[in-house]
Image 1 (cartoon, rainbow, N blue to C red):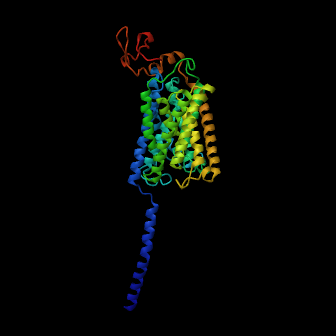
Image 2: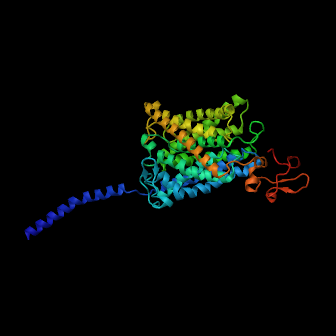
Image 3: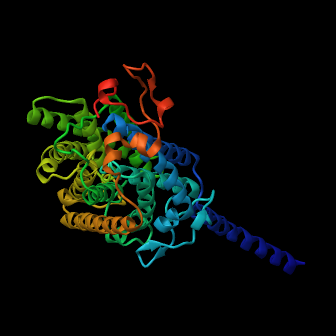
Length: 471
């Protein structure tokens, strides 16, 4: 009996000694298992919705800057891309950009058609939100990047060619670079290129690609000899305001959680846009003698572009510097460089996004601080000149890849499709010739009959007999 009690006592002692270790192991396993955080999830979903709103905002921003006869075709390009690229992203775009790495170059096809993407988190990218939320958020980036390019070739590209080009471009240009910079295993990410929300992936790719398209298809008929003023500046300002609003989701949402880093990115985003608004207007005022609302709207977008790669890596004072330089630099690109070189970047996609994104990516190498984001790196001004070199590599690769691949796409596509509207279509306007619609309804002064949607299948009336604004 004594031996039995001794045995039971020893067993009880061993169990009590084992329990703390067992609970510790269980706690460690629970901590290692990704757990959805409702606050982070709500924040990222709202951010994705804000980024989605940016593309219709871009449609208004661009739509107000073209002539009356092309307003609907310009808006249609951005709005249609919202549908087209969203479907492409779900079917194969997401897996190519973020799927399991293949040789540091592209994502595998494991997530084709969103197979394996669901409600549970993917700890490789975001451990506190559903994989669906991350996928959707990144998909909105793909959408607006393709839409940004349309500003360069506005008023002259056939809709069929535009749609096919956008689909191919999103697949073989955007997806690979997104994987290089943001995908786990991507070679730029492993190299240490910093791009918080898309300076290289979004803005350099879209701006440089847009310039190539503009050069390949040529200038608009009458460019340089006819007045081509924006037809509706209030529409453009509304669009710019929606872009500014949505950009908080674009940049702050890239923290992928409702946390201090998101708040920091929110602050730097706003004050960089504000600083660039001021610097563009002041530079324009000094250069042309008058400040304009178009300049203010363009300046805010230039600041938003410039701060995008740096938003989660720099201090507020650095953001002001980035915005001030970005606004003045982009104005000079639009007002001076474009005029001297003579390319027809219709709505300044290259001048604002290509060059603004370049400045922002390099500025990240100057102003980045690990005190802001420990997952980043210190830049030149914080004792690490190598980071500027790394950023320069990212910029050069993005420029070359975008230019070469876009040129190849256009040349191959041109064999099968006509890229540009013919002269008669440009004169009449793409709204009627491509879509059979008009953006505005007027009354013919001679017949009194309406000119608008009801007459969408008839030819444009003579300017002498209508109230239509200047074409």
